[in-house]
Length: 216
Image (cartoon, rainbow, N blue to C red; front, side):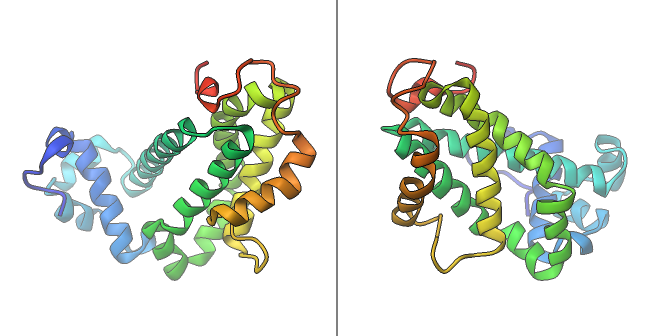
C-alpha cells in the first residue's frame, strides 16, 4: 500500500500524490476498468470524501491525473538518457530505445493490454494518438533542432513518435527498437538518409546533444 512512512522523497508526498500513486497500484493490480474509488481509498488510506474533494469527477479525473504524472516521469527519465548522447545518431537511437523500452516495461500498460486491449488501442490510436504525438513532438523538437534545424526537427520528432507507437503495437520480426543494435541499424537505414547526420543544417550550433535541452 501507499500509506505509511517511507524513506526518502516519499515522505514528502502530498495527499493528492498518494491518491494518484494508489490509483496506479490499483490499475496495475486489477486493470483500469475494474478499479473503483473504494479500491483507491483503501489503497491510499484516504477517505472517499477527500478523494472527491481533491479530484472532482472521481475516477475519470484521477486517471487523467495518473496519465499526466506518468507522462512527466517518462520525459524526466528520457531527458536523463538524452543528456548523455554523443552525436545526432546517438541521440536518435537513445530516443528509440528508451521510449520503446519504457512502453514494453510499463506494467500498467501490460495490464490494460491483457484486460482491455480495445481501450489501449483507442488510447494509442484513435483518441490518444494526436495528444501523444503532439506532446512527444514538443518535447523532442528542441533536442533535434541544433543538429538538423528548426524546420526539420518537428518533422523528425513527429515521425519518430509515430514509429515508436507503431512498432510497439505491432512488433516486427525485422526491427526491435528497444535493442540498441537494431535501433542503430534502423537509424542508419531510415533516419540519417532522410534527415542527414546532424552536421549540416543545425541552427543551434554545437555538436553535443546536451545543447538541445528543453528551454535552450
